[in-house]
Image 1: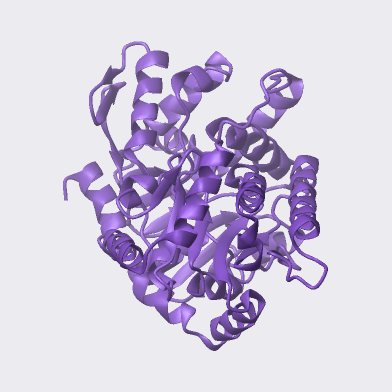
Image 2 (image 1 turned 180 degrees about the horizontal axis):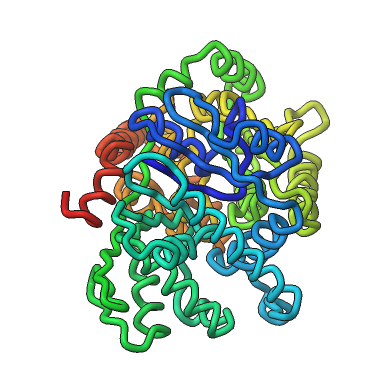
Amino acid sequence: MTYWRAGRRLLPRSVGPGGLVPVMTPVMRRFGGRWMFSSFSPEDREVARSSPGGRERDGFVLQVLDVPEAMHRGHYEVVSVEYLGRLFHYLFELARAPVFDRRFAAAWRDYARVNALYAEAILRAPGEDPVFVEDHHLMLVARDVRRLRPSFARPLLYFHHVPWCAPDYFALLPRPVRTEILSGILAHDGVAFHSRRWARAFLDCCDRFLPGAGVAEDTVEWEGRRVPVIAAPAAVDTTALAGSARSPQADRWAARLNRRAAGRHALVRVDRVDLWKNALRGFQAFELLLEQRRELAADVCFLAVLTPTRTWVPEYRRYQQACERAAERINERFGGRGRRAPVSLLLASDPRLPDHHRALGALRIADAVLVNPLFDGLNLVAKEAAVVSERDAVVVLSENAGAYEDLADGALGINPFDVEQTADALGRAVDMPARERRSRAATLKRAVRARTPERWVRDQLRAATGR
């Protein structure tokens, strides 16, 4: 099995909350194969040049594709993060952005060139395994594979890990780019998303922007090909996750964070500081809860375990600073004078090496977990919390997270933009009777365990190949 993914360095020694690495790693360990990345740093480029065929690790091959630094910036930092990442997560401030100009046009050429490099690498790779193309960094790869080798017979499957936006928002893209993206994705033998909601949005975009496409409930006919479009939510490896949560490192973090909670209800959030993860409104909701119920300042501890990300982007740095100021403000208002601080904000000291054990330790001791993304393809933290919690944690979950489709029966659903509703849900989680907590926790565990990494892969293969 071959996986192709751009924009990330080789597997870090410690992975952070959510993201693609904890989704893909158990799959690769189970099925083996080749996992390809584009170079992200001078060190990565040195690895690519010294080991062009890749290096074996944990039963599979990790291979770095040598992408020139300037091309990488255009492909990843400009197109994939600044434009497509904001598009699919509904993050543009439309009075100011997006602006499609010469800078974007040059970066889009870099995007296409990197996709072509991956297509060439696929054709050079040994073996006859299916090829899985992962996420919006590589939406043109299959098109280039078929252009370079029309007889290519190995299954080509595409998985979109982030949300897909509605047609009116997708229409922000220039018309040629819209067409190139949609037709590029439809060059695969199968297309999959974490939720039916995102799959339907993609189908709606095909129907609106590809004249002549035959769009049905779960397929698109385009240029003589019939492409299945399915929802296949990614799964957690519950056995491996439970083992990691019981490791000595996680034990130490759980004990340390328990001391911080000091007998109070532990409200936990575990996230990267991505704009769409919505950490700031989480602090605002907790602050509102304490305004409404000041007695909870002594009874509830908000443990926010955050991992800095994309710190080269000024807006990300400002957003993290706003979160830090919010935590300080809440502690000044409701702590001090001999009272314990109601907020404990833990930021990873090195964003390149986030500590998964710290995140698992926090989730273990949580009485409630806040997962309130604006829009999220899946959100693995919600599923991890259901597996590792030792206190029947109540999961307060955004209705715009892809995981909500699987977890709605056990979670407390919220509109992530509604701070008052979020505050009410946090209060309800604190007050929830033990019997209801156990029932909801059991429902969440059943939903998570019903899906496995093996099923995730096989659902995609079955849709594309019928086998």
